[in-house]
Length: 311
Image 1 (cartoon, one colour):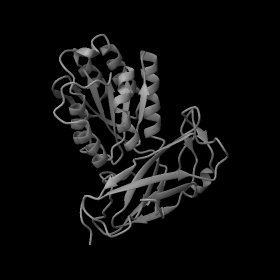
Image 2: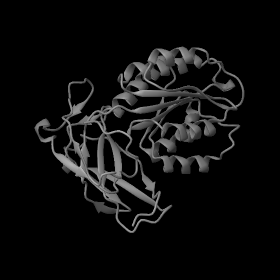
Image 3: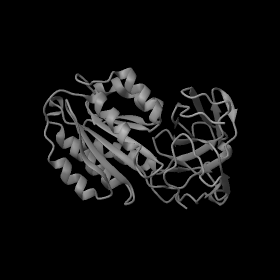
Image 4: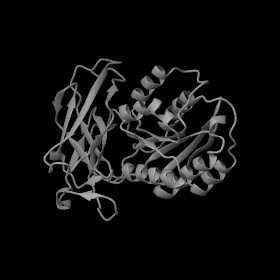
């Protein structure tokens, strides 16, 4: 069954217990590396109380998702201490996706690339995915609320024009604040920009803190090398920075993002106590038991803030 509205960092069952059936992950999509036995992917695990939930992306040397891994292939550490994985899921769930688009003067001549990104995200996703649009120059504007209507999104982006300074940090910050209201547990923020900020009201360290607090993977489609300045936002949240200087490269990046979101592993564990409100706890995920070079990259959020006190 599909589980919705489960907070990214902690799951709390209103009834005290909740059964989650792990569905079989199909490997019939092209561009994937399947290393597992699908007959082993159907345990039913009961979840209750507080859990830390971590979405993990595993890719090979060609950047393709590595599928077919089992729970035994993952080791999870919190603050360098091994944790027991009590929930493991490979199901393909819908996602709530935010698209944050740069429309400042520096993007003049590149708005067709921005439109190509929106079209590619819509076409690469599933019909259940919900997407919202924000655009920014010196101000941040929500162009479209969450919707599953791709045609409406593409019509909205056609009206964009480029002008004004660049409040990039503000745009990402407001995107992070809005995307958490999506109805699906799985969320992502995709930012299309040339990477230069000159007008934001928040500082970059403040944005980094907000990214850690939200725990939403940030994918950046950089239309210039300047996007490297915000690349660590992807690193700390489990997203990725893609450099894409042509429409075909943009479409390829968007396709890879969509495939990743629907080919992730979801792990959960009970956090060690005591939990102190506001405390930052680091997360490390290792993939083990595979042939050398089978896995090139493992991405996940690098930690979480304890949001409330638990008894």
